[in-house]
Image (cartoon, rainbow, N blue to C red; front, side):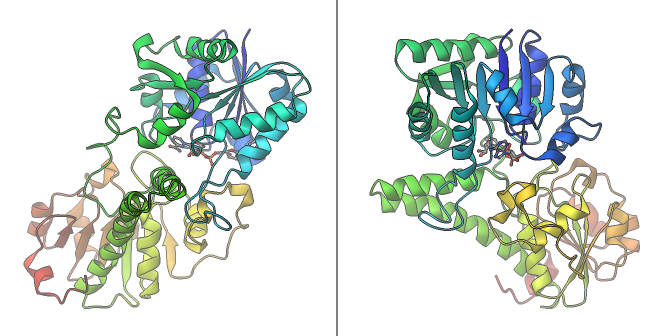
Length: 449
Ligand code: NAD
């Protein structure tokens, strides 16, 4: 029986391994992590991440050929194929800070593999990493090899949160890069055989190591997730990957003497930041240039619908902007906990991609923030509603009831184009829909931005 071990039980490691296990009953898959709370949650009825369809997949194979464990070293030692799916946040200090990927977690995982291995291993780079990381990892492994043969493969992940299970079941493509040597080709073939259990052969693309790494950052045309599924008019894009991958690209361009190209990519991040502050300015300027002491309801905190992930969510910047103007914010999101929201709002930029166990213990709650479990509770007595995540349920709300319970004039700032603006204007709301013509009211207000 082939044994797979995946280091990192996060948004990528968990769902990816669950799908491999369900599609390959003859393979034993163990997902390991240093975070005990995360592993405990994977072994419980309340999984640590929300993804449509994930519960069913995990239930179908957990305890049969899918296991979650904190005994990292034991399972790494026993595995034939080791996926490394640890987090690779943007560096916060030192060389390349704010742009380059922080490979601390990756490097420590590689050193641990070298320490505990007693048999030959295929090590699969699943995390998103700078081009040529595989070569660096290969050096760490081979210099500490004790005679063991390591084959490094790059197998970047293209799943999107919110549709992870669907994406894994029917990927646009699976990309596998390896060394162009007989041993390298054999390793590529071994991983290809795993995916071939459910992915059509023509969708499994094999290439060399660095081409696979580069294709993760520059895969544009072949990717059905880019375009209308992601790039809609909105309060700004978020998520742990897109910004980080662009910053990676900026760093590569700078290191290769291409400052103009680097600046081009930097502008994407700048415009995205501008979009968030512009939204806050719109809210404040529309409400007579002050939100001080006013209750503003925030509907949606996750970076997009169908996930509870809040990393880089524009809601953090928007809430911080409103709090800076002394608003009281009342937040409702169907999948994000109060603890997570308080933590996010207390944290500095860039810190939130580090694992939970490395984040500060529960920060003291911010007084002007309340988190509630119902959209009607959030909007009761509010002066304004800001829709920051496109959850389907926000389309179905009883907006007449919401209007009746709000202060007047009642504003809706729809950062995701979720609501039917005309219908809401009929009820009496003043509506701002992102990227759409302004209400007469909003046109008359002195614009800050
Ligand atoms: P995550 O933070 O959710 O999970 C990473 C996990 O790795 C954490 O639980 C952490 O405790 C664990 N970990 C760190 N060091 C470890 C070690 N030495 N031993 C054992 N466990 C360790 O991250 P994620 O969202 O799953 O992303 C993982 C990688 O995949 C990143 O490089 C990311 O860029 C990439 N990626 C993410 C997505 C996405 O949609 N989230 C999509 C494609 C690629």
